[in-house]
Length: 199
Image 1 (cartoon, rainbow, N blue to C red):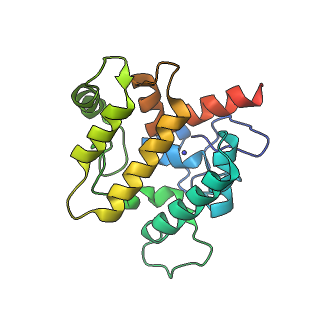
Image 2: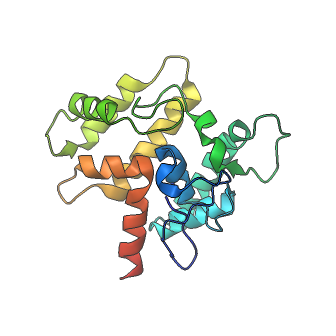
């Protein structure tokens, strides 16, 4: 979820995340989420998540499910001290509070990308080939990174990684190192959106 998409697919990296920070200084997790902030107001509503998935090429059923699952699951965590909202908004600047226990460890507590952790993560889990993750590698990685008492986090991790695999696997069935890195900061989403816009 980078740079803020729009319905016209204007992917210029203009960051309206609610912090006023330049886009290149934002944590990777924040930029990941910002792809889905269609109107660039620092808040992602379910209909924006839905539109983001549609821009990436997913069908109506999956996009609808993803929008509900993601926003219902993350909204309250990104709005500390506020009453729950029936519109389930996600506040981009607070997305670090939604980090789950069952994650890859590549992002730190502030949502920043840690290159050394990424290299370690990739080397450990790309068992079938140095080219990237196969579906089997992905399943094994999810099993190994799931924390025993993090049931919902495990489901979220499984769902997200399977979607990423469908979205970005190459013709040989690999989720490449470059693609995986692009998932973390949302740059992969921007690339795919631009490619689809030119077809």
